[in-house]
Image (cartoon, rainbow, N blue to C red):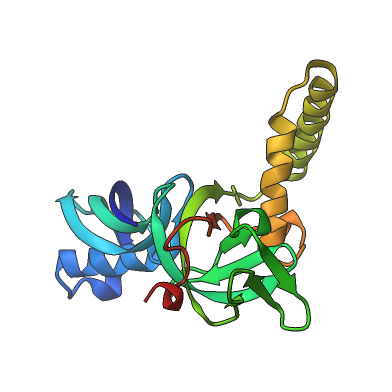
Length: 228
């Protein structure tokens, strides 16, 4: 669930922090920049683990701050596909279940990935697994699930030229799909649909930078209380 990732960055230290030790000032700046941030194709950065290398500080003309080349490691949340995690149900809908953890909210379990025989009860806003006894998957219950997919969404700002180029590329991909059976657009649409389900059907502009798709289909999955 947690991994150590190595980074290299040019870190700026404010003149007001020159009275601190170099390592303490670097720790503050690195945590301020990276903590609780998603790095594309890396994961959710949580905090600084250690500092490996510290270069000489350089002061730029007209700035006053010290710039230091630093190599460090961060604690990163990035569970692998197939890993079993525990969270809490935040909401249920006809499309599936949204799950939250203490520090991460963007988890979705589609209805196709629930136990066979599960049905959604609109009046209860909950899913029920029909067995010998009805087992409810209800809001705020503790749930165990398996990671099936991770989705990274690039949220880099786009200018007008980039947007037009992307639209042109999408049209080209659609033509290729129609003529050659290319499934790239289908995969993109599937990912977009997962993002919409995570956020109640909103547009792509609100898609989180990092999200997980989970499942509850095997022994031991589902509410933790079922298996105690």
